[in-house]
Image 1 (cartoon, one colour):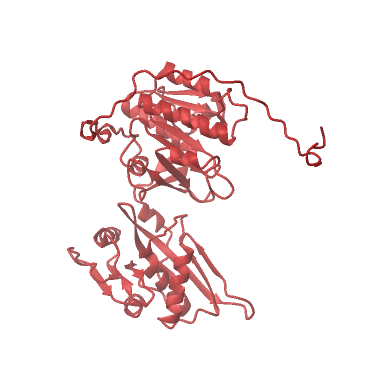
Image 2: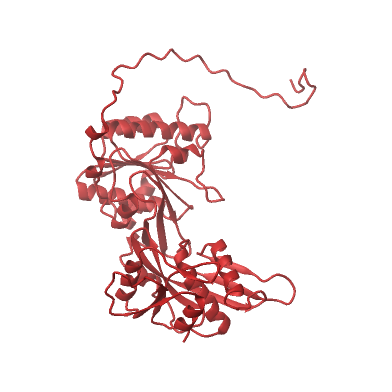
Length: 432
């Protein structure tokens, strides 16, 4: 019928197929019994290293039995390459087997990639399949110590009428893998697609079901890749893993501070080195600022890359009001080279000094590192773990640091640490 006999609207009828009645569910045998919390085994002792230190750092120290992790990122960022290397390294270090389920690439394509990145371990078994029942059968037959599913959006269950990639299929297949992991203790890594907005494709409940959500990010035109945990039931979400994309695959960056400062040109106006913390790791990065006169008509531009836009606007307002820098008629651009994104307030002082240096066209002292939070009254406030920041700066050869009051407390630095109270003192200590 093209027209509804009730309301008279055309093309408003939708076909609905009635599902067959399901058999009555039988009572489960051997139901779980409550046990004292103190009698439970400590899974922290059962962690197993993947053999890749940066990956273990983000996971919280290694793989936990029965954990399900979702790895997401932009297309072509290196998710499949990284997990293939993880499976290879895991089987080599633990003398076990891993099953790599590929729903997007054929077995021949995976063989080409494994040969390129040097991940051709005989312990890594490959299954090019998208049928959920066939995957469960292969897992039961192989009994691996690690499973990788690339990707969850390609799986489907024949019992459901919807196609692969739909909300119901993703939720159902993820639930079956989750149940299998918890019952057998098999750690599972799922690869997830992202939408144009950067969110994980599929139902939001997918992120709530898994134990860990990892994001692999970075500029596709740059070599560095950053692995972050936005959810981790077995560790911190503040850790950062840094990799370099090479022809032979993902390589760990052993000294990220030196790598990010490798191309820095000291003695240029608008450049400041800041010490930030990514979890337990101190990191030195360069903050670049460019201040130029805005066109006579229209609003001045504010563009930030790698920095929190709202905090940068706050710092610019403080510079205008408390430090007497006239920025209302200036375009301000701020950037952190290397594809790193910093959200910690400790970078405020470096941003303020880089902007002031560019505006006055006077370089900052090349041997100086900065960190500190800038308050609305122009004061420089203390930040956490100052000693670790100072140790990292002095380890890389910087002989001077401008920091908030109390940064020297409890330390034995032979180098110079200049403690400042406000922006005026910071300008005096930092500008050449």
